[in-house]
Image 1: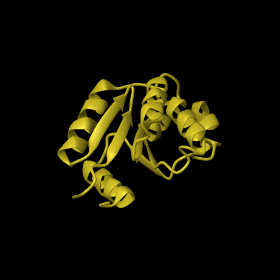
Image 2 (image 1 turned 90 degrees about the horizontal axis):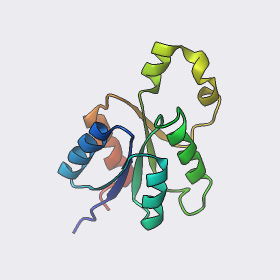
Image 3 (image 1 turned 60 degrees about the horizontal axis):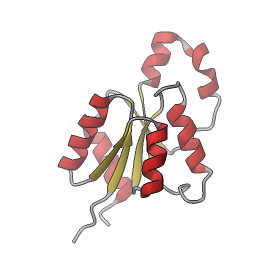
Amino acid sequence: MEKQHEILVVDDDRDIRDVLRIILEKNGYSVRLAKNGKEAVKELQAKKPDLMVLDIMMSTDTEGFDLAFELSNNPEFENMPIILLTSFLEKVREDGPDQFQHILGEQWPAKWMFEKPLNTEKFLKKLEGILGNT
């Protein structure tokens, strides 16, 4: 029997959390939700998921980015796959790049990033590629 992978979705937008939960559960994933970095840390301490989907901009412009960076430097979580979600590129286009230099100058703490609105088909293919069928 195929293992049901568990995904932690962290986003301050309830609608996005709910939509991702529906999409992921419909495709056979077990889903836990958190609305900010603090809740995400509690969820991570309770049980490490197989993968985390993490919004970059929540209560601050870099809350998700900061959490991903922390986790990438923590031996317990450094190999946990993280997919960053962002409307960042749209926000940069709207607000101009000067406000975001502190982000643009940093090394990204995750291998994968998807822009909102999410292309569901590409997102699910990426999850399958990362997690495989084990």
